[in-house]
Length: 572
Image (cartoon, rainbow, N blue to C red; front, side):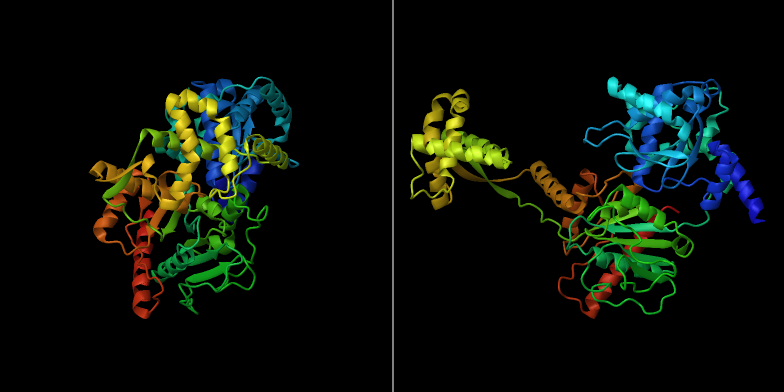
């Protein structure tokens, strides 16, 4: 019966992919899914860019005339990669399109690079993760396309594809590319303005594509320590287990002092629905049979990139996890692969303990005098001068020689100067003299001559009245809301700055930990929404150093509420 089932699943897979029978059968045996989805954000993004480039290159076309939709004879979807086999007549055109689709981007990331070549496939790695596999007979076309691209690089054909400008279409585009042979018998194909809808990509055997079970993955991540990442992950795992789910708590960090637990609260000794494992040996609390330690091996010390995300995604597909648990909670503190975990998870939670205080209504502003305006300009220019100063030993040596020459010509720094860098400031004023005269005219010389004395006076008295007057005023409602949004954005950036911020269901949820009153918290929610941030409805109590029974009960109750809220956000 198993053979009959595999054959049926193989025939269904080939309807969507067009693969050779032997390859499709092998993939069906290796994967529990007939058509596995891309396991990481990097892989989905790479496939979406490829489909957008193909749609822009081929436009409206007849698949029969091109050897297949967009010149693709067949595709081979895997969890961590995608095989693309082009029709012989369109091979160079398709490969050239791939290279232009993943050319060097505006962030400086390199383009599609050859990762390795095995006996059967040429592996091409994307700049942000993800892998494309080409059959070995595509090698000459790849060499020709690379030579053509280096000689006269062309524009990305995806730039005119309308849906490519919408980030939340990435997952749909990846699914369409993995089922591209569904469109082989269409009279014409046009993905230029929109992607196919659900009915078009369901295919003839949608019942075989439904996966009966897959662990739902929740990543608890943070870019900065001290926000209670481990406490939240452990509490969430226990709360989900108490609801009857089979939960795996996965600690990815290494070298974490102390033991696992919820603020010192011990793990349950006998809970058939909960297991807790760690990257380090002898740190398993409730071990999983067949799963050792060091399950994600970093490519370099401190590495947290596409390779680690791929390993983590494949780990979650192992039978020891895939068949035994309904939920996986990844504790990914700043030292525990937070980027990889966020790229892999179905839901990302970021605890936010250090929330900013709302700004006051009254502020003190400085109204500068004409001389103070020049001084402010000089100070800004000096900061820019310091930031762009010498960076190598040779530059430092040349700068010191300039200082010494300036001291000989204009007199050394006085012994009673209160500013240690007075000589450097005087040299800076000499260098900017011409620019200052052009900008400020007659106001330049007295301001230039008095700038260093102004700084000494400011150090001594705290404020130099010659620079301007301090005035207190009340912010308008619009100004106060803008100040609040600025504070919220800056504080949230400390939590999320190194994480992949995606759209749709992969966008992180901030989980506040605060004693803030409800009316103030409501304003914070509005400010977060204006910044595109999502704040969970559940608020964790800020216990401080109080970990008594009553405080712990309040925290566990909030963790149960968060587990309920998180469960509603997970894919069903």
